[in-house]
Length: 261
Image (tube, rainbow, N blue to C red; front, side):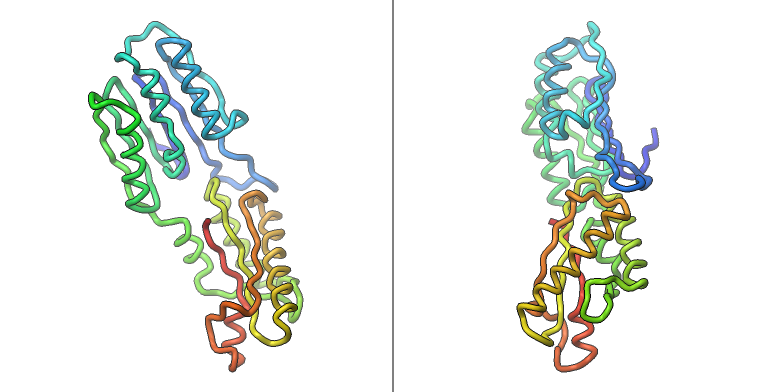
């Protein structure tokens, strides 16, 4: 079965699956959090309740869609307990993946940002099951979310009208590209950091850097980025990346940065 980018598929037991689908098209304003759909057949009500309880804890009850059926299907001893334990917060780091638990065989696929996440997910699955369960780690490394932001910005400067927090047309065009990437990042939290040169008082520059960062935040929200995924910081002139003694250096220091938290 082929899945779109951003879809996490959890196949639990021979006849049960839980899918976590991330929206790939922008909503008009604030896109909803992606749904988590639990469906299939489990051997008893206790297993169904345990799975749903874990999903509610991890993703929130409002995001979980229950399509689980209960039938007298065979399962290994304590299978429901092990399956529920394997539904851990570490799974939220996976993109475009699937976890299948069929009997005592567990296989995890999908994309994570780095090797540490890859090992963390596999370790959590092993710890949640017993020695009789075999975990196959088929997770692959993808481009990190921070790298995606950096590559999209591509060392360009988001410009404002002189001495104000009013975005220029070119600045808005760059933010349109940034918004497209951020909408595809699920629950990632991005900190928007404003910087200035050292011309004028530090107090005024800190205030201006914050106002500009907040203007970026508001523009991104208008483009469909979730409001609760964005934070704002104003650094003023405190973290220059170039020499403030030259016009070119001061221009480089008047910048907006984006950092994944």
